[in-house]
Image (cartoon, protein in one colour):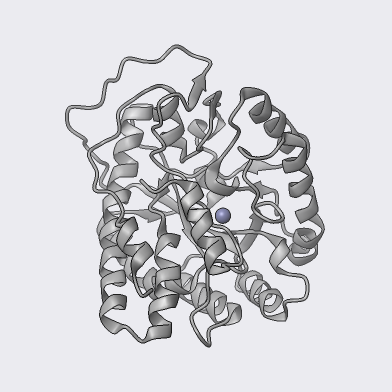
Length: 333
Ligand SMILES: [Zn+2]
């Protein structure tokens, strides 16, 4: 897998405005320091998946996720996303905001107003997307607090106290992890955990480059590979739950509010329907008891909730086909 630092370096090289969540299958020896002794790996012999899994969609890095293709803007992106969601009767979907994008950017401000006016919700993704692994708990908590005035201003009387960790990193030491968890709890937040993640945002910046080049063949490959990758990791995420928890759980899917997502969301929703998924709100999904458990492990690289259990308990991952990161990185350069 591509290391998170490489992704960050690429994003900075591209001048991308906001960093993106990148955390999965971080099964790195020595990265976990679980409080419990390692469990004996016991994956299911066969993975029997439910006919009708449940999922809440969530969108990170609002209101300015990823690079913009030439001529595009944030109002167009969030208008399109909300229309696509509403066409599937999806309301109250959470978008996690880095408010650093808002001051002085009329386009971003109007985009976020459109998201809220369409009946969607917002939560916090920190002010400017720092890594908890690379910063102290105090710095990180200050960064969350910085985000609050603009969240409160935009959300009005609606609750914005759901929190998504950048890069899904919840602390590389137990002291740091426990400090931030306690801070979030004392400030009224709940953590918006993730169970399904296919690194959707890795397709956006190649898409912006290929649009600038009018490379229709490359864009066709991006669309096809995105959907293949989504289908693969929807399966993988559910199979990880069988190993991590012994059963599937109501899901939270991590997506990003990018230009490429506006192109792909209708087909992604079709895949979810074909796989029997039923949609639920984030608060409803996270009322399941699994979301009140504490993995109680320090993980340098973070990850989805099942990833955190697999990594900290040394449990095996299901067989999977990796994302085509090299091709995505080199496309349309
Ligand atoms: Zn993010």
